[in-house]
Image 1 (cartoon, rainbow, N blue to C red):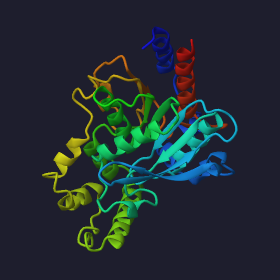
Image 2 (cartoon, one colour; image 1 turned 180 degrees about the vertical axis):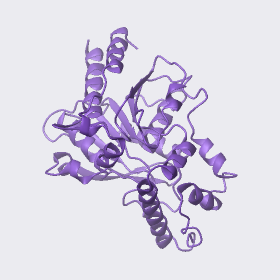
Image 3 (tube, rainbow, N blue to C red; image 1 turned 60 degrees about the horizontal axis):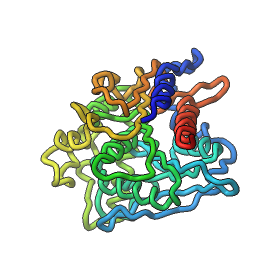
Image 4 (tube, helix red, strand yellow; image 1 turned 135 degrees about the vertical axis):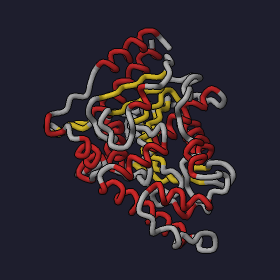
Length: 340
């Protein structure tokens, strides 16, 4: 990686997110991050969106939406992956997509399996360890981008997926994938699940409601394969995770399941491409200590902020999203380096 770009990233790591006093509450940050109020008004990115079904190998299909620049040449392709029980239409996805589309990038908003309106596409049930199909779809999206430089942005669980895709560049390279950004990623999904259960009751009820709705939808589509009626009375995310494990015979128990996509204990030692992680100390779900213990790697840029909540990093007066501007700056700097 060029020295000048490393120096630039060093400066980015020193620039902090300093919201106004009223925007420093982590729960307010986390709730507004997913609120529709972020996307009031016309969104040219959505106007340009076209549905796309992408092949993930072995008959797996994932749903996404591609928005191409209508008049000018695109600066690059940005692929966005939502968090658990979110979708390509989540508020933080639409907001980030709108901002970067306005800066001249093509956008692809990808739904993980059984997220958004995609439950009918695959008989198999979603779980967090499904990296093979997600990697293949991201690779296919990049290959269809007419050699544009590509950038991947993941949020929360999607941030975990994005990091695992970055780590695969050592063995299965996506040639035009230039930088991966991970916003509030879950490095240890077991801890994140416990934090959801033990934080404000609102969060637990929010995720349980969405998860149970998704399971009921899957059961209605494939009644001969799924009957979740005996497990949907659980009142914590961890209890429901444990109860649903019989539908995942590849895992011995929920601990082995979580371990399959935990990114600790030297996970980033062999990282071979630029990755930027943005996380806050006050995240209600993601323990910051997991990031403080990560091993050093010249390709790993860790931006730990005092404030920001979970996928928030918003200021309200005037309204602005800190990481949206930062992602654009980092991408533009990388393009400048290439053009020299």
